Length: 124
Image (tube, rainbow, N blue to C red; front, side):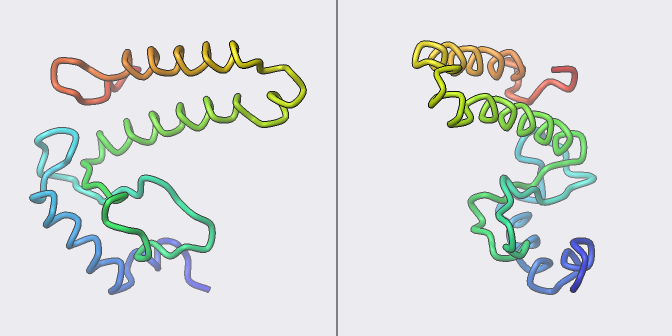
């Protein structure tokens, strides 16, 4: 079975990666950088190949923005982890608590975004 790194050398991935970069003008979608570009998957599904994703969930990012996107996605995953159904079923997370969690998430995410240029802040 090929490794993920080997899959990223597969002609099917290279073709899709090229199409995504072409769509995005060979420019990071989060900043004007045209160097150190990669194509980022917005999410992963188990057993799905890198080339099987719809282009709408693939983004051209420079490495610094890729790191910030990974940080933001990790933050989002941690919020959803707190919303685990067992917390709702057992009453640990009430409806009011869920509302507060979502409002807090929105505020935290707003803070992570630099309102001057829309890029995620590196130190958030």
